[in-house]
Image 1 (cartoon, helix red, strand yellow):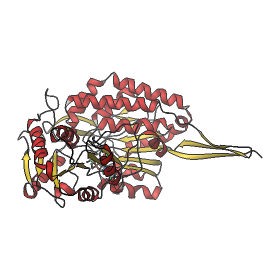
Image 2: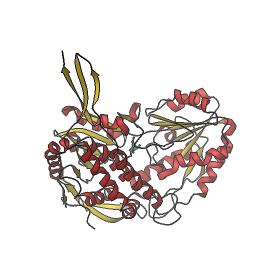
Image 3: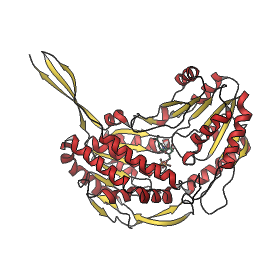
Image 4: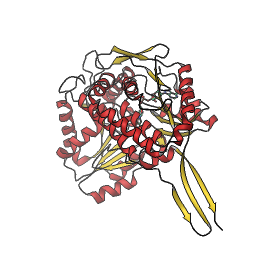
Length: 467
Ligand code: NAD
């Protein structure tokens, strides 16, 4: 299998190749085509040419395309999931979930209408609000959910009548390019273009004068660069960035019951989720019991290659992130007490045992920074107001959660948390039918649902005088 770019409806070998590493071995296991600046130019030019026609297609035609893409994904779950596990590291069952999730996103948007709203229809005038496509959209992705994220960009962008140039993360290009090869004959040439890079084409795409909007998902650090890059051409911009989500456990929780849910919220996908639970605040009365429960679950967890049966947590996706997580663990050794994990597996891949750190406070690296990995700091609190203040005391504002049997009490806390999404007795439940976006430095704008479509369209008012 050759993994090639998709430009103007054709597979394109690019100019050179990218080595793709299997994080379970640390070794190169596959190569794919590398896009150079000239391929990006070709892709943008193809998208621009395709826009006139695609934007005039009736909505129904665009919905039919999205349904057809969903069917292709559903018919290729196994190969796509295998590839995802090889390049991303996650256990195969999680990859199957992700592939099905990608198909679900296409089906969801295939069922979404973009209606003309009649704002007024009186004797004097009729005023209509239309949502017009923007033009060429550029999408830039991270490496934690390559296919889910690709679907979340492709489906609404195309439904809205835009054309797209999408760039996966350099370390996880394969499943996206494979999807491109599977659907290339379904999608009109130029409507969807896929380019893979060596972490070098983002600035070109964000500055390109023919691109009208950038949808970026990645770190806050890179998001800041993207925001400055779009200024000279006044592009629309949606930023889905990093987070440092806090969870607050209230006094009435049963540690045995919540521990499993909290563990899942923090360690699914090895903690490499923008809305993973990244800091846990626990009242002093439950602190020892809950720490012990979390440590017991961590110690029982099976860490191993994603393709090996029984693995519950795979490797960390790439070497740089692996080293960053290990360095945060070293800082936690000084700043707190590690009661589970705390080490790599000593295998060639990027494996780290799920790590629970107690007796750690705000103001330490592990609590204040986004770890984006399998390490959870558990912080003791005496006073709920203080816990809420700590949860909010961060430049981020992506998600947060409150855990309690008393929903009214939890709701009162949720109202005081500053985050784009606040869950009660859950953390990380997202989907294409629920708008999603961060406050503060976790993002600008929103994706998913109608709000996502609104950000991919331009308002146009038609105002007809009658009298
Ligand atoms: P990253 O910012 O390093 O890279 C993301 C993408 O940006 C990659 O495709 C990369 O090639 C590209 N890029 C790099 N430099 C660029 C530049 N100057 N201009 C344009 N593009 C550039 O992020 P990552 O390490 O791949 O992902 C992890 C981060 O993403 C975490 O902080 C996580 O919280 C965040 N994330 C956020 C969401 C969300 O929806 N809010 C979802 C997933 C991940």
